[in-house]
Amino acid sequence: MCSRIATRGNKHTHHKIRIMNSFKPGDRSIAQMLKGCASGMLIAGAAIALTSCGEKKADADASTAVLRFSAIPDADTTAQAERYQPVADYLGKKLGIKVEFVSSDSYPASVQKFANGDIHLAWFGGVSGVQARQAVEGARAVASGEADLTFKSYFIANASTGLTRSEDFPGAIANLSFTYGSASSTSGCIMPSHFIMENTGKGPMDFFQKKPIGFSGAHDKTALAVQDGTFQTGALNFSTFDKMLEAGELDPAKVNVIWETPPYADYNFTAHPALEEAFGEGFIDKLRDALVSCDDAATLKALGRKKLVKVNNDTFAGIASVMEKVKFD
Image (cartoon, rainbow, N blue to C red; front, side):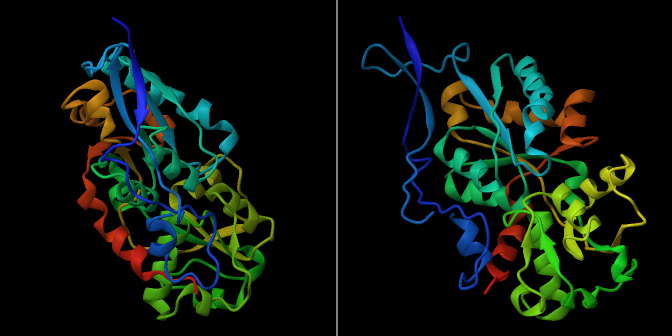
C-alpha cells in the first residue's frame, strides 16, 4: 500500500484574499487592506489529505505527514530558522510527528502561506492571526504567551527631539517624522494607530503633518531607525525595545520611550483545520495542550515567552474591530 500527502483545495480554503505590504492613501481601512489581502487571487489551498494508490481515501498516517510551522518576521529575518528551530524540535518530540520550520520574509507572506496551506501552524501577531483565520474557514487560535494577553506598544523618540516619558499621549509627534514597523503589525502599526485615533480623534494621515510616514518592516528596524535619526519618532512592541536595550543594542542617551499604550491581546499560535485530516480528529487540541504545557527552556526562549496559555478566536475579537476602524486615507 502506498500513500502520500496531497495538498488540494477544499471547504477550508475557498476565500479570496489580498496581501498588502504597505498602506497607500485612498485605501479606506485596515480591514479592507488586511482582512482579506489580494483581490482577484483565488486561494486554492489547503487541506492536507492522505490518499492511497486506489480511489479510496486512506486514513491519516502521521508517520508520513509533516506539520509545517512558521512565524511572522517581527525582527531579524535572516535568523528566523535558527531562532524557531527549537519550537519545531519540541513539537516534533512531544507529538511524535515530523515538524519543519518554514521561513517567511514578510507578514503578508506568512498569511499567504497559511491560506495556501503551505504552513499549518503559525506564530502570528494579533492582526495577522485575524487575517489568517478570516482567510481559512475553521482555523483556530490555540495558544498565546501569558504576557500576550496584556501586550502593549511603545512610542519612542530620538533624544534630539527633547521628548521624555509621560503618561499623557505625546501629541507633539504630529509635527515630527514617524515610522511604523510592518503595515500588518499589530503592535507596530495597527494598535498604535488606534490609540492615535482614540487620543486625538484623527486618523494617522490627518494626525501626522510630516510625511511620508515610514514603514520600517520590523520592530528592531524601527528602534534603530529612530536611534540613528532616520526618523524622529516611531512605534513598536515593548518586548523588542526592552530586549534590545538590555542587550546593549540601543543607547538610552540616543533613543527613549515617551509613551506606552494601554494593554491589548496580540501574539498567538493559529492552527490550520487541515491538521485534523492529516493527523486525525482531535489533533489540534493535542497540539494546543502540547503548547500550553511547554516548559522547554529553548522553546520558550525562542518565542520570548515565560509561559503559554489557552486562547480562542474570541480572544482577538477586539483586534478585528480595530482593523475596521483604523484608516489610512
